[in-house]
Length: 517
Image (tube, rainbow, N blue to C red; front, side, top):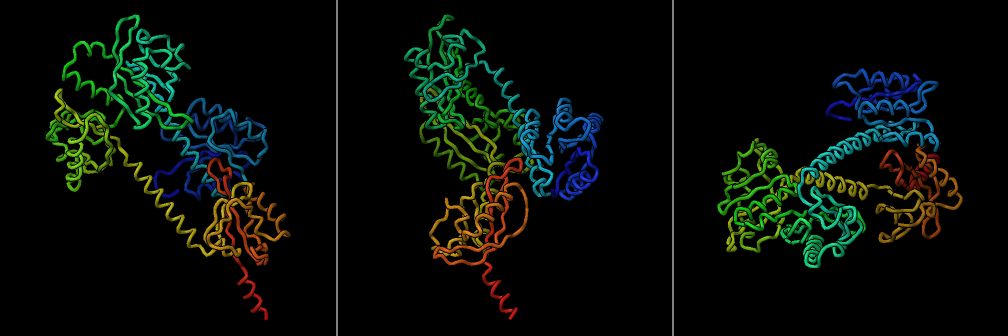
């Protein structure tokens, strides 16, 4: 750890010498360490910690001697407070690991692991814990939002099958929600209404969103009109899923005018939870700007309403570009959400990169009267993408510049990637790919058993430095190589791939032979 606020770890270890060693290792990586010799002491320390003194993470030995074991201590601590727990043990037997399965933990570190592995596991635990906290907070907000939405909300698949139903007023449904689940829209609704909804789903499948369609139903409570919004969810399933928001506009339908129409569009866009929702007139003057958008840019509502958007919130060097984009939008078709991103000035002078979805506002005659826009802050996303691209570029440069053969295999030893030096080192052409072949194929038969045993040691996390082998070229000739291997771990220290650095040491042998003469 370098820079930032120092993280505090509560190390629970009954062996004093081991605890002292682990404490020193953790402190070398920048952590502040408190220790407890038993589960009971750990519980007392956590209970006695005041505000701001709670440990940021607990590193818990499973076997704590004759007293309470680590899993029980962790369970009791987690009943009182939320803190990431990483279990520490010298055992890898299934029955030991299984003891942690019913405890909310964020990793399992074998005591023989290096400091680097321990630090990586702890950092991963912090990331997972922070992600879980964010997910919990998001779920709480989502539940509150669903409770506050007065509209019908359905989750369906591409075929229109009901997967979930949310309805604050059952009188607006053609059947109880429990009877709709698993059935198709075309089975439960009249053909005219079903066609409107299915068209919206198909459009959303192509464009990501479909808004503005209307349909009516004859229910026991009377004739009802609904306005439909469809949004395609992130595709994490084999078939796309969609959220349908069906708003009862019966009263509005009976007495509809231009003002109510404008409000309906604003409410529809606000319901998709954009961070910024605003409308501007033909002169670029802000006529509506939501509270979340004000706060995102550092303003108090309704401070921005009545101001010219370009003059107040656009950097000077971007004004012409954005003005040209909006002019082109105004001359095009209405009712289409058009994405666009540009930097926006905050009140304090800082900048945020905003992804906009814009649509043209028109009056009853079809004349252009302004722009309605929803914006999402993508500053952090673009910064992350830039860092990823930079990391990938550095990785490629390192691989291509290395004088050694750098090879990555899966956990069975099959090659999935090799550097440009790999092919010529073993007598192959530059274009020849070794992907899919076993790394043992490139050693003489007499070395393969020893190499296989060493491969297993690598997967167990053992480090033993470079090993000398005899490499096998394509033409059958052999040459001495030095190979150093290390597993690549992503989650909880478990290996996902193995990285090998292969060095041709033929020249070294010739130099040593010359020196001895």
